[in-house]
Image (spheres, rainbow, N blue to C red):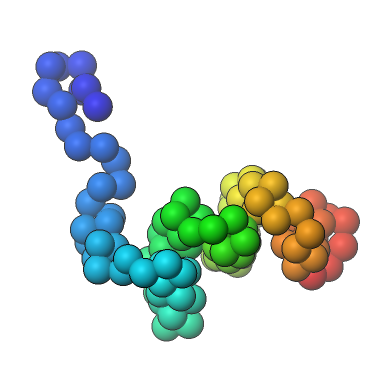
Amino acid sequence: MDRGNGRKRPPLGRGLAELFGVDEVEEKGSLFEEAKRLEQEGRFIEAFHYYLLSSRREDPRIAAKALNNASLILYEHYGEKGRKFALQYLEEALGLDPQNQLIRENWNTLRGEGEA
C-alpha cells in the first residue's frame, strides 16, 4: 500500500497473524478448532480473527461454521453496532452451506424474523 508519499507500508492485518502465531497452526481444521478454544477461554478478539482465517482456508462447510461463529461474536459483543456485519457474515456462510439450519436460524433471528 502506498501512503501517497512514496513510502509503502505492509498490508493491513499482517501483524495480527504474527501476533497470534497463526503460522504455528497449519493442519486442516486446526484454525477452526483453535478459534473455538480461544472463544471458550474468553479471548474473543483472537477467536474472531481465527474464525475469519478459518473461513478463508478451510473447506466450505467448516468455513460456513466459522463465519457463523464470527457473526455471533460480533453480535453478542457489539449488539446493534455489529448486526450489519454479522448479517453479512451469515449471508456469506449461507452461500457456502445453504442447508445449514443453525446458520439460517441465526440469520433469521438477526433479521428480526425468528429466534435461534
